[in-house]
Amino acid sequence: MRTSWADSVANSASEIAVADNNPLPRPTRSTYVPPHLRNRTASEAPTLPGPVTDRAGFSAAAGGSQWPRWGGGSGGNKPESGRPAQGYGYAGAGRGGGGGGGWNNRSGGWDRREREVNPFGDDEEVDTEHSFNEHENSGINFDAYEDIPVETSGDNVPPPVNTFAEIDLGEVLNQNIRRCKYVKPTPVQRHAIPIALGGRDLMACAQTGSGKTAAFCFPIISGIMREQYVQRPRVARTVYPLALILSPTRELSCQIHDEAKKFSYQTGVKVVVAYGGAPINQQLRELERGVDILVATPGRLVDLLERARVSLQMIRYLALDEADRMLDMGFEPQIRKIVEQMDMPTRGVRQTMLFSATFPREIQRLASDFLSNYIFLAVGRVGSSTDLIVQRVEFVQETDKRSHLMDLLHAQRENGIHGKQALTLVFVETKKGADALEHWLCMNGFPATTIHGDRTQQEREMALRSFKSGKTPILVATDVAARGLDIPHVAHVVNFDLPNDIDDYVHRIGRTGRAGKSGLATAFFNEGNLSLSRPLAELMQEANQEVPAWLTRYASRAPYGGNKNRRSGGGRFGGRDFRREGSFSRNLDYYGGGNSSTAAYGVPGNYGGGYAPGVTSAWD
Ligand SMILES: Nc1ncnc2c1ncn2[C@@H]1O[C@H](COP(=O)(O)OP(=O)(O)OP(=O)(O)O)[C@@H](O)[C@H]1O
Image 1 (cartoon, rainbow, N blue to C red):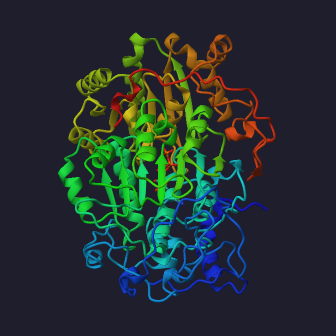
Image 2: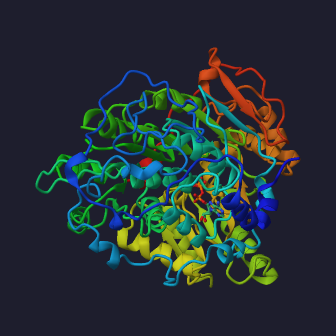
Image 3: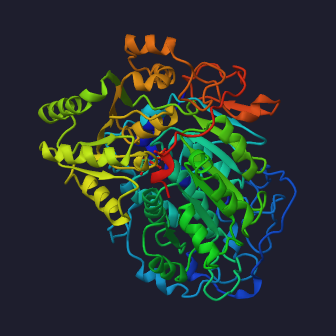
């Protein structure tokens, strides 16, 4: 019988208790000793593993742990891959080999830990059992993700886990996970975390709001915690982060930074963010205080690299969030520069993880340049939207859009369907259009603010704060707010102007219906959106939405557009790992509900190439 994520939530505390007392063979786990209590002898610091040929990667290890314990002590073995794979448990976390080295070689040592601001705002000890039983996320429909089909392809795919307790990320990180009230891993976390802990490169595609941030943050933080002895070069004013997380927008980088700070609280792992539009000196000062994980937007990072204030020489982990956006025409040259033309260890030496809710095949092909013997993971159909979001499409002529929006907002206000705190995010195509609509809404008694690339960073951040707090419950945005932003209580996303690309639509509507909550998305469609009619109708159908008859008629007449080759094999489970076009080995794993996945990876590319002109304007 399948165990659902939701059902398991209720039982998690007991599962964890059982896991802790389980007499069955399980990975042996030495007691985790916080870094500040460890013996700090610098003599045994290993250097960065040298480049390797292709890695054999994951293999079973004898002796209780399913995976080899390369991340362990100075006497431990290294993986063939040349970089550490992490087994269950700490295997001594490097201490067994004879004392160990310093905590990396950060200046400032442990004392800073004492001054670390508590990002949870709780200063009491976290009571494990109580915390796991607490349902802060009450109202979250954890079942919602259970019927999602999961596909993995690649060699020797590490098996998924069902609970955080099975993974053993380390007690401090576990405690932070409990503080976040994450009781069970989401499906993408169940699969991606073991893959990443196994040292494997990963291309992961999972629906919006399904917990991808933690899926890449946990293994990185845990990995850095294990690698206590990395000796970093000492070059005045240059810092050497061990992990780099790149994202396309400033706001998203800030959000990932905030999340990563929470997850790494009291682990000794330092997270710093660098993004454009904010004073660089302040960011430089932060960097100088020490950095293990650098979260950055590409533009600001290139600046820091060119000033030689950051070196990528010690990077062990590279994560690209919204990876398909990062590799599209707007960003690809910058990403290539950062990854291939600076001093970052080559693929195969570093571990590379790419995450997004959408992964057009042509972008997958590009992305494979950055990956080595990687595993492809798809949770749900690539580029699909979650059926937690009720999608409506209304035929509205350009000239009627404002009054139509007004009707929606009035109805929403009167019905109070979504409660007092309901926030509405309205997407428009241009920056000027955003300003004009915001002004008009305010004039008509609807407090609104706006976020787009022509606003200063300060204005952007203020707008976001004002929206989040409910002070201005309507945010008019360009695509700068389309990806990644996790804003609680967004009940309604309105596509006032539809995007040209269906993937952009998927990300936009994904600002609601997150973490198992439901949401509403309304789109205004007219003849100007013809090319989107077919992919939109298909997407809605796949997400079990009601497709208006008029949209079906438009779709049947429309040329195939609005789609960057997302859907190739047809059917719900078609269109996956682009390597399956060849005879790549694969492994399919279902949580039920999925249709047969054996559909051929059909039709060859009809990649239209590129994004609509102007969409990069708001990106960093
Ligand atoms: N295991 C978990 N249990 C409960 N909530 C979780 C869990 N993992 C993540 N979340 C919450 O789910 C929400 C969405 O997570 P996240 O922002 O990582 O989604 P995402 O998949 O990256 O979405 P997007 O594709 O839009 O970037 C966040 O509020 C996060 O705190």
